[in-house]
Amino acid sequence: MKKGIVALLLVTLLFTLMADFGGKESIVICSSAEQFRNDCLQEKLNEKFPQYNVIVMYMPTGKTAAKILTEGKNTEVDMLVGVETGYLRKIQDSLADISGRSNIQYIDGLGPENYENRWVTWERFAGAIIVNTEVLEKHGLEAPKTYEDLLKPEYKNLVAMPDPKSSGTGYFFYKNWVNTMGEDEALAYVDKLHDNLKQFTESGSGPIKMLTQGEVAVGLGMTFQAVSEINEGQPFEIIYPPTGSPYSLTGTALIDGHQDKTGVSEVFDYIINDFLVYDKENFSPELVLEDQKNNIPNYPQDIQYADMTGIEDVEEKERLLSIWKY
Image (cartoon, rainbow, N blue to C red; front, side, top):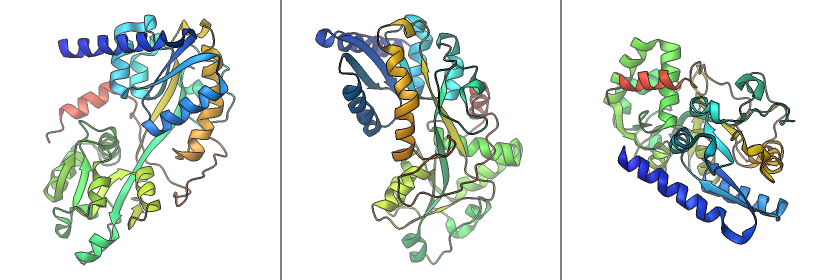
């Protein structure tokens, strides 16, 4: 606990030092997106708002929530980008009402009105069964078509999955199994799957890395990472099980009371109406918007998404992870 508090204090000091840089009005954005996307956002904001000292700082979603829980509305952070919606619910009392700020059309169920106008949906992280076709061929195996196929003895030590305790990707697979199989059957399935697994990886990108290195033939991983590897020449195939593609959601929010600070509302409105669309078209194309365009080659079309009821319930997540024994 003490280490966590010290870490938050160090982060706060860093933000404060950066916010004082250059003598301009500073606007601090805490983003949980990948660094290359943050770099693009920073570049766009520098071009659009040269009159402000806009700071885009990376922070993992859990640490972001912990910071806001500790500091509340008095934080030096002005807005949050790409934070898991379950964590946003925990800090909702510190978030501003953004009614009327979003002017883009979301698909049913993902508009800000569904979240009491405390955040806009930023993106959908979605997954699939990813296979390395060369490794399958080497072992004389056919590609799996269902989760049940992964239990076949011929896949022993050829499967990788992210650990739900350390990875949001791993958790959304786990939560989907609970939703579709029932809790007892899902846990029994994991016990059987464990016998075939080469590894539970710490990060969501772990199975993709193992597939790239030829260590496994099958990985449960994120679709956008698999597509990126395909576009780099990897012999990957993306397979969606009959239950659909599991996923989680992130959101972007404004800290309450900061909307009156010079430039903050202006920058926030640009991010949620302009850069959000650019980001979906070029970086994270899973469907969240009506008539959403996709500029990424080889990205699957007409994806059927899985039943993710309760994916935003942090208390349920904590309960399910407490009974995860691996």
